[in-house]
Length: 252
Image 1 (tube, rainbow, N blue to C red):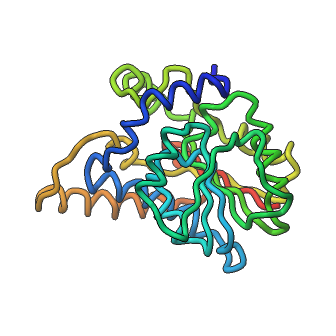
Image 2 (image 1 turned 30 degrees about the vertical axis):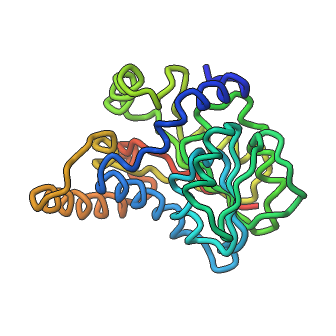
């Protein structure tokens, strides 16, 4: 079962130094950005405005996310994580504040895009986050969430192993079905939404520390090309469910 807000805060305050480490390898960075690109390529020009990231942690992805916005705000419940974010990105474009995604300190219709990456599957009372996201989005705004998929048994087994071996994986986190994400959008009044299955090959490699050299450059070049082919499968293809990640995209 996902943790309460206070338990989440204590957990991430405790392991905050893990988030100040660079990506385990340049390939890890590229895998993350490849996944994010699949969500952001759906945006219209109107939606490249004010962005809010809920659960920004140490700002690890903030620079990438903010490249799709005119102004970026990141919020998190961990002050230690936010301290790292402010040190890592001390400039005028990035703003970091302490806030709980279930009770955001922003006016209605303040943002054009809200994004979360690997956040919802840690949270209890997720409907409160969906409701708050809907409230702070402007009409026509979009919520993009990147979450682990529950459909793939191999991926689920690897997650069990990862929870035992890596401190950043909490044993109580969960994964989602397509139906669960769609139901959450529907129940919280999003006008239209879609769920994309993603990361068919590369997602299995994201926790490994591959040293950059010509051999891995060649191998990952092939893997990225194969991944691009798989992402072009029709959204109703059964093969899409081999992806280990879900990208939920909901419009107000």
